[in-house]
Length: 197
Image (cartoon, rainbow, N blue to C red; front, side, top):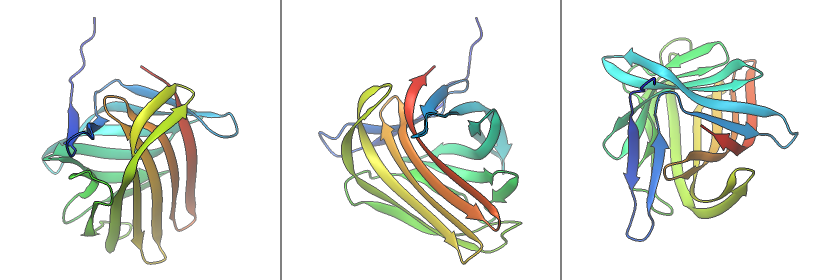
């Protein structure tokens, strides 16, 4: 039986709110269905060292091809993003990684700052994450109590990213809405969890 290294990050929430988790277990695969009935997957496809930090590689695949790849590592009460790839465009963060999600996770709490992106951006990226609140979400995989987190990042007119994630403890992303663009590379993705393994 094959064994996988297990890495998970849990964000402590206020009393009675439970926890928000971002499972980063190698080998995990989540399948989503779009409003048009098409499918895509999010999988933890392996590990990679970036700036001396062991990161989990979270890959979104549509029609078998990677469209978004995030390199994530737990830190304190959060998860940092060390690199983001949109299509074929690799956006590394030169001075420090961005927060993918960060506690304290309470309604209205925000996290964000400016980080300098390496090539091809080579400029400051401003980003902001907001915990919008708890929400019960029904998707093809069932009904889950989630935290809804809205994330946005901008670098002038060159780069933008808007993403809403519905995160459930021990499950991960239950629902996602993503819109990003870098020059002529535009990625739009919307889906609800269908199954996980």
